[in-house]
Image (cartoon, rainbow, N blue to C red; front, side):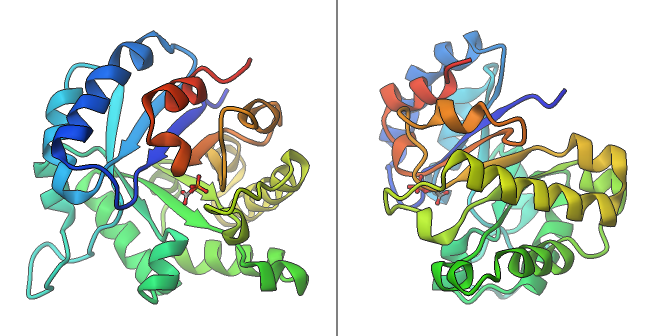
Length: 251
Ligand code: PGA
C-alpha cells in the first residue's frame, strides 16, 4: 500500500511572511488528512521560517535544489547540511526547470541525489520528456536514460527513500495536463525500469507522483489511476484553498 503524497513546488514565489501565513493555514487541513503525506517546497529564503511554522504538524518541508558538496566555493549553492539545518526533511532534485534553465545533467542529478540521501534527506527526483521528445516517440528512451543515469549506483535501501515525479515538460505551467491514461502509462514504464534496476519490492513500494498542470479539477481523474501515487504541483499549490482541495482529492 503506497501512501499518496501531495507536494507543492512553490518555485520562485512567496516571501517569508507569505510562506508562514500559508503554513499556518494549511496545517490544520494537512493534520486532518490521514490518507496522504503533505510536502511543500518554498524558496530557500523561506525554508527556515516555514519549517518552524510547520513544526509538530504533518506538513513536511522540501527544498527545491541542493548541491552535492558539504561546503565549498560554490556561489549561490546550498548544501544538504544547510537544508537539514533549516529544518528540511525533503529535497526536489532534477526539476525540468533546473535541467533546462541551468543545464543540469543526469550525472549532476545523481551526485545531488547521493549527497542528499547520505545526509538523511528524502528526495523527490523529477523526470520527464519534452514535447519534441514525445512527438519523436522518444518518451520511453528519455525516461530510461533519466532513471538509469540519475539513479545510478543507488542501493535498494537508498532507492526506497526516494520518490519519483513524472513531469512531462510540455505539461508544466502550460495548462496542458497529460491525460490520466498517458500519465499512468509513463508511470508503469518508470516502475518497470525501477524493477529492473532495484528489484520487485522496491519498485512496488516507490511512490511515483505526477506533475504538470495538476489542479483541483483534474486531480481526481489522475489519482484514480492505480499507478499514480500523488502529485507534484506548481501553480495550484500557491493558494491555500486550491492546495487544500488537492490534499483532499476525491477518493
Ligand atoms: P505546474 O508545475 O503545476 O505549475 O504545471 C508543476 C511543477 O513544475 O512541478
